[in-house]
Amino acid sequence: MEMRVAYKVTPELRVKFKEPFGVLIGGSFDETMAKIEAIVASKHPRIVSVGDRVTRNLHDHGIIPQLSVIDNKCMRRKLPPQSFKADKVVHVDNPHGTITEEAILAIREALEGNQQVHIVVDGEEDLLTLVAVLYAPEGSVVVYGQPFKGVVAVTVTSEKKAEVVGFLKAMEVVRKAK
Image (cartoon, rainbow, N blue to C red; front, side):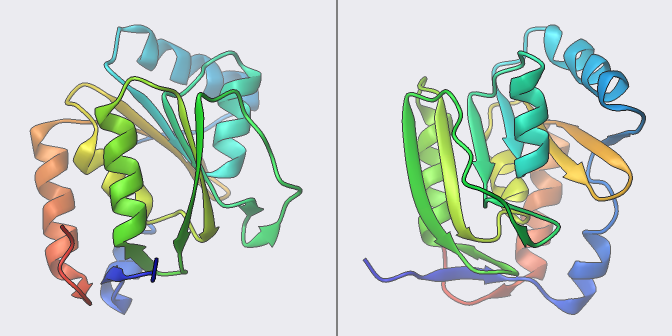
């Protein structure tokens, strides 16, 4: 299947995306994981992790995301391939600075089902946080790393979904996503 890029980040948005999209949680590993645990303990429909380090930290702390998205890199440096407990592992192409139709479809399908899904991205997973927020049920929590600052927890609301739609509309549309 040929890879189709649906969206490409613009320089203006790249600056905007450096700001946390949810609640920034700083502190030590134990402090951040305790705060994440408190957030997800209040019965959220889904927990989604985007990023290698945050996914590993959640798993190491016994918080198992229904969907995890990694690219086997941390700060753009290659990591040894990681494996996590999952019912299904999906591989997608998603080049740096883009969101592909393939990645959108994989995330949407994962969040519509009840299996634990682990998506391994060839390219970069950062922008896929937006797709996870868009397709996760309201009340879900999407967790991603904020380099040198901590982790960010995004509680999915209709307002956050609308913000994502605004970001996608501001991106360069390469090909309409289905």
